[in-house]
Image 1 (tube, helix red, strand yellow):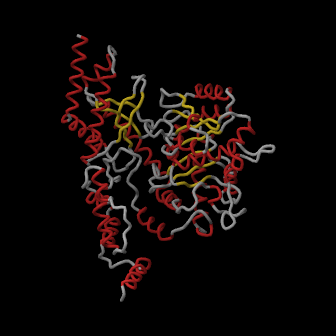
Image 2 (cartoon, one colour):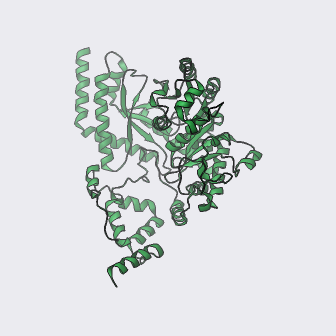
Image 3 (tube, helix red, strand yellow):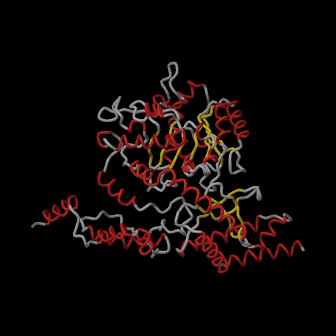
Amino acid sequence: MSNAEASLEHLFRVFTMPEHKDSTLSQIEQHLSDNLSDFLSRHVVAKRTSLEEIEQDFNDPHLPSQPEFVSTHAEHLLEKLVTNSVNTYAPTFIGHMTSALPYFHLSLAKLLVGLNQNLVKIETSKAFTPLERQVLGMMHNLVYEQSDTFYANHLHSAVHSLGAFCSGGTLANVTALWVARNTKLAARGDFKGVSKEGLVAAYKAYNINNLGLICSKRGHYSLGKTVDLLGIGRTNILHASVDSHTLDPKEVLALGKAYQAQGNDLLAIVGVAGTTETGHIDPLDELADVAQELGCWFHVDAAWGGATLFSDTYKPLLKGIERADSVTLDAHKQMYVPMGAGMTLFKDPAASTAVRHHAQYILRKGSKDLGSTTLEGSRNGMAMMVYSSLHVLGKSGYQLLIDQSIQKAKLFAEMINRHPDFELITEPTLSLLTYRYCPARVQTVLQSGEYDTHVINENLDSLIKAIQKQQREAGKSFVSRTRLGINAYPNECITVFRVVIANPLTTVAHLNDILEEQVKIASKVPLLNTLMTCIESVDHVTA
């Protein structure tokens, strides 16, 4: 057999049948099916301690010239990729909005890949299209609670859309505000609409200088990307309540009126239901009133906090979300679905008509092709994962998961408050909180208010960065860090630990161990001596 024939046979087998069952890939698959958590704890071992070392494993820009056996390649992945990946399933991984997943998603992932449906058009997703529409209807019902008649009329309507699936919250925010922009600058008189004539013509037709957006400083960075893509410009993001974690409706109203008085108009007010850094929730009901008074779109970014609606206990925290024109949700966060499953929902099923596109070979007028009202074209059927999770876990299961996450965050906050060497910075509204290592003696000096705190906070910042980095590299646990402006220090930002309690496997004992590990690391970091020397010099000066 010639080399060409051998290569052709190899490629044919790759598409039709697996290698023998004892191959590395089959063994990995079996281990994953048996006990995913155990597999990850044994194989994700951080063999490389730095990103630079890992980059050396992926430093060859040349294409592989010849095919290789799947089992050989699987061994390569196990050695180079898996061992140095992040074990997001670990109960001590509490630094980001990524968690352990229910085991059934592994099997569903194989089904999803095997079917390989393309949700852009119904011709390649005949069953997935109505399934996705149903999931959007379920989530729409969770937020807006419309009548059965409403959903009977709109769920599978070819001329309506209750929302759009996206790869994540960023594209969901872009989609929502894309619809808002086209609705705001719709056709009138001789003007054919911004989607056809562009922003310059739209501003002339509407006699405005600029179009702006109001959000808090805690608004997600995707909002900056959104106004960039929509041509509005980042200088037209108006940040209200810059010294607070949530928006002040009175300030928003005053800011909006002042902006309009300058010959501008407002595209939208964006309220956040669960800020990325601290988990705070804007006063949504009051902001809906302000948006109505200013005559602009009201969007709620609930990528993190939207799942709180499953909980009868904490749902009231999101009062007013049902008044939003659009809402962003991420199922790959607190709905425990694999990356990436974002959604944007529209209160008005006709809203997405503002961005409807057609083509001759797909997305024809009158068809139910999902791609006609989505920003993305080709995409997989992640709605199936959400559909299955909603059925397997149910509303009561999600309520239990949400409630216990928030309760554990509150318990962790109490642990921090009780510990003499830690300082709680932001209380958990949902299951996020921030805190910092701050020895008791340092806290006393800072709270005295007798001198400039800047130098001490700078030393604390350096110490916290060192602790966070060493804890991450040790690999036993992980918390993230960020910088916040808080009322106690109005003229500066401070570095803090950021914790996200989402993994159901995380226990109070794990949280206690994380604190103790940080104390132990701090005791060995030379920067602690620098900090205490700084405190001694302050004492000497004040004495």
